[in-house]
Amino acid sequence: MSSRASAPTRFWGWLREHAVMIVGLLVIAYMLVPIVVIFVFSFNDPAGRYNFTWVGFTLEHWKNVFGIPELNEALWVSIKLALLATLISTVIGTMMALALVRHQFFGRRAANFLIVIPMATPEIVMGSSLLSFFLILGTPALGFQTLLIAHVMFCISFVVVVVRSRLIGFDRRLEEAARDLGANSFETFRLVTLPLILPGVFGGAMLAFALSIDDFVISNFNAGTEVTFPLYIFGAFQRGVPVEVNCIAMILFGVTVVAMVFTTLQQRRAEKMASIRPEQEELPPGAVTEIAAT
Amino acid sequence: MGETLKRRAAAYGLLLPGTAWLVVFFLIPLYFLGRLSLNVNLGTYYPFDWHWQNYSDALGLYDTQFFRSFEYSIAATLICLVLAYPLAYAIAFKAGKWRHAMLLAVVAPFFTTYLIRTISWVTILSDESPVVDVLKFLQIAPDGRVLATAPAVIAGLVYNYLPFMVLPIYASLERLDTRLMEAAKDLYANTATTFFKVTLPLSAPGVVAGTLLTFIPATGDYVNAQFLGGSNNQMIGNVIQSLYLKQSDYPAAAALSFVLMAIILIIVLIYIRFAGSEALMGEEGAAA
Image (cartoon, rainbow over all chains, first blue to last red):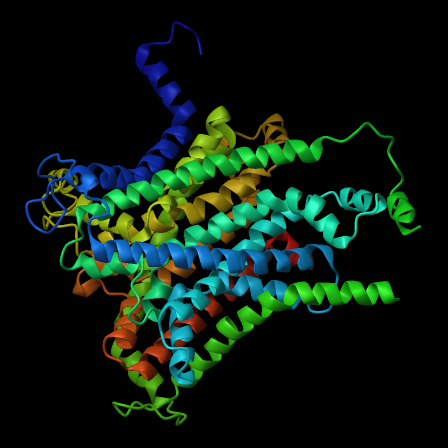
């Protein structure tokens, strides 16, 4: 392209060059528009009960964020539920990931399959089948317990997938070194394995928390009279969602962004730590295992 | 010998809690769903009776919603693919130092509650909104309404499941050996040929995974139809939800839910038969 090319030609050339990026940015804009709308409408001063049209600017709802008792209660239920579901599913899921990556055993394929199918099942089928299960058994009564059971169930697979991806690149020689230095299995796990896989575990836990606190469909089936944050919003939709919900959504958004950035930085630090090793001569494969065995 | 036994025991020990949880609260409930679908509805109680009629009754009553669900979800999946591929491509090959920022923008919608995001579209598409004015001006919404129409529901589905399409495609493009694309250029392939003969086939696993991750949840979705659709846009999820939670017609609801799962399973199996199973199971699963 010569510098003497006319302006329109240059423009079309530029457009051709950057077409993919322009389309990409437009798609990103499409994805971000609703978030901007939620943010803007958290400052709205709606005339009636419905927060759908812009009326005027006010900070009133931000000052009153935690001023609606039912909303607070629902939020609290969601947070409690998400914390418990995250804790249980992360522990169980990490154990499963460890077994799948490090051990060869009969039934491995079946275990992999069992982890994949919940992710390939529509939520409505999972929600309705669990409800059928609880209805036919007659116990436990629908409520917080059944919600917790359901949330752990759909979080496990995701935790396994995230933690497993971290474990695959794990240098097992670090554990063998710890053993050689006299650490027992538990100490090796606590002092070497856990710190190294922690970013992966933390990533899995964050995903579990996000899935749990956001879940509507499965909760809607198994909540009984318990109300979570998404269930509150669903219930409030017909009579008008209070503006405070937008404020809370933005607070959750902010917290998540901070957590995301923090995890990414942690992960980078861990990767650096794992890659730092003293200068050493390349040992033939198997040598370390032999040394460890003696 | 003792060592191998111990190791094997350790593996099963680690596996046990998770497997038990998934078997008891995922697999067994599916059996109960099937069982409930064969119960007879006597109004106040539902004895088991091999009542196959539930299936013919439910399908006869709600076949429209069934077809509509697949129509909407297939449309949404195709639109997602068309939107997601250029974005994933841009992030993988054109973004440079902006790669992380763009990826963050892709997952950003997940940071706000699903229901609020969808309700936000109600605001954007409501009758008085400037967006709808523009669409009216462009003659795209001749009836003057966007809410309570099929395009509104499909747009909502596209919006909500787009990240599930972008991320797997991005992952497969990012892993792609760019030297292959350079080689195609060296061999005088033009941009289009390079794309269709090299890039696209190599990113197929991502496309397969993305389409499945979009299609499966979109088919069962009922939130978008509930908020953005009218009574003529209800999907099978809305029917199942209402039969379970409002009308307490559990056997019919269970039958519909079971059929939905069966159809999705069949479609997925046919699809991965043609497209290869690596995409769904991941390399790990395919290797095992």
